[in-house]
Image (cartoon, rainbow, N blue to C red; front, top):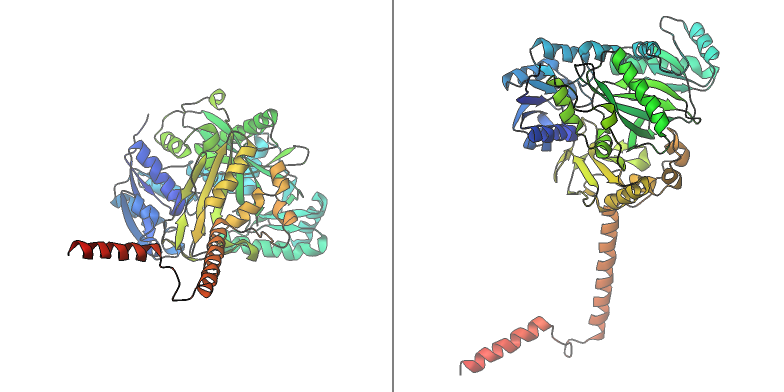
Length: 510
């Protein structure tokens, strides 16, 4: 039975909120935005049909307050809540509260989020579903000596990982026994601070894997399909910065293997909605289950570009109870797509945020270029949230054309008032190993160990060109003025014209 959604409250901000608003508009669904104090003039607030204040700027007092979001959804009579990504997107308690309030949560069931959000439970689910996993061990309740024995049994280097969260928090690579105890304590403390859960576990560390993920869609009727893969190996501190689809290394046979594996764990977990199953792929193309993201991914547009599907609209259809319109054989990958995350950051200083006002902002355009932006000219990049400005997504008939178009689009991009990662992305587009598709999760640290991403972005090049032209003009003018005395200097054309015109008028009046 389907239930048509008439209004969606978007429990998020920035570019993903704008992205969801556009999908709502395409579907004829009303959109309601929420905003904090510093977001009161934000782009997503201006775009939405309605907007509601939910609290002070810190996310803990606004975007993360369950009761305030649900109260607002009731107030505006929204049928559903779309959480986007981040904030409350993978919070099972929030999903439960939405359902208890009679509001559709556009995402998986709370019990699925809970199951797959816990990395230990997700790992067990993957094993039961027959997926290959990286050798590892749960060390919950073990003392340091026993945990060290487990690490030794797995073999160094090992990865200490938080059980209750991701994003690189609560994660440490341990290369030897003498560093183990300190790394274990540090990871557990960070996990407790970030997720309120100090549990950690061990995995064998793969030195140069690729990070490849499979996009899935599953409906309430038992149908589940995969939409190809995304290569997400270009990362910094375990955070993705460039993604592409398809992967330059994945064959048709490997795509089918990984896709079937992703569908298998989704079925085992009773998955409903859009989601992503992430894998590590070794040098011999062996793949291992990593985790499941029970939400829309930041990088979902590259999948949209090569499949022609609108994943936000598909989420809405699934939430309404409609069956998938596609079977696996309908999914074809056409061309190639690359996404560059444009952040207000300083790459040469370790990607520290650069906050402030956008005093200049011009996005690129042209064939194959899409920009999902959450800002406008004079928008603020506040200190309270992720400093993403926009996502540049580029499509081409093959990977080489896509790289060339991405380079051109980056050169057209103009961002002023804050530092940006445009120059960093241009550097990567010129990197020979990247062009060859020779990638791993250690790409950035191996290629740029000193954060040397020196590449002038479009704004800097434009300012430099203007400065050179102006300097040249001034110097030439000085030479002309020095060579021409005041009594024999020829009058300019404008002065000569008006002198003659005045003389004609004088003669005509006589």
